[in-house]
Image 1 (cartoon, one colour):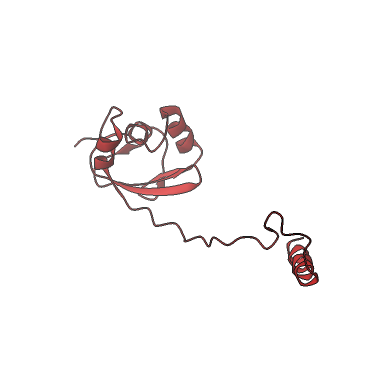
Image 2 (tube, one colour):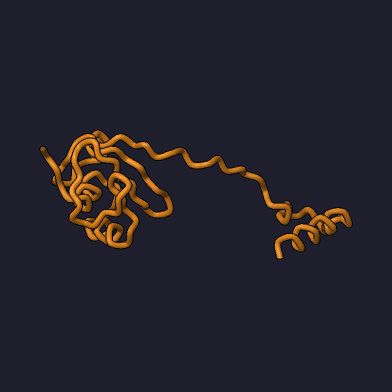
Length: 122
């Protein structure tokens, strides 16, 4: 059965930018293989589930194909199935403290809303 090191595989499928970054993530406890903490030399084989914290996101991928060398992005995507849950939707609302340029001084009502907002934040 074909297998490779987890740090090498993470780098080859472009989940990390460099192999030392992948090894550091493993040593830091940010990579798990089949829900077990992974060292850089932990082997991965087709069917394994790899959970890696990359940047500020936790990626969950299932290994489909093991590769040894880094390949292009189009080929790298075929080596795993992305099972990462969708990020929670963000509500894009303008903060209450932002005023249009040239709108003049705030009215008494707007000042009270601003003071209420600042008191809640501080």
